[in-house]
Image (tube, rainbow, N blue to C red; front, side, top):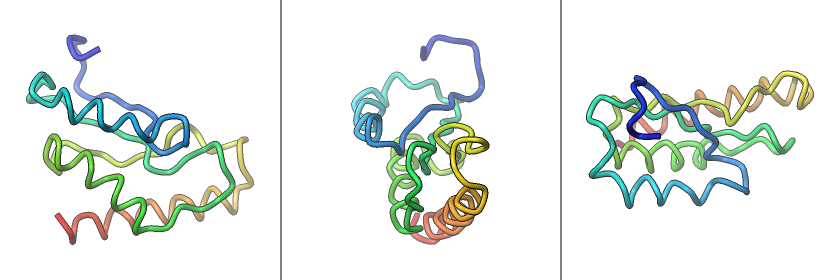
Length: 107
C-alpha cells in the first residue's frame, strides 16, 4: 500500500476492530513516504456512542507523532449517512472538530 502513487491514505482507526492498528504505522514509520498524508478515521460509524473529544484528540495525536501534525487529516471511519441517526452523526462530527482543536493545542 505504501508504494501506491497517492497523496493520501484514508483508513479506519476508531472502531473496535481496527483501533489497535495504529501500532503498525508506528512500527513502520521509517518506510512511510515523506509526502504521504494519513487520513485516519477518529470517530466510528459502527456505534451510536459519541466519542469524547479527548479520545478523538488522543487518536489524532497518535498519528501526528508518527508523521507530523501537518500530515494528518482527521476523518470518520466511514460514511455516517444511513448508518446512524442524523443527530448522532452531527454529534460525532462536533466531537471530531473539538477533538481536533484539542489535539492541536496539545501538539
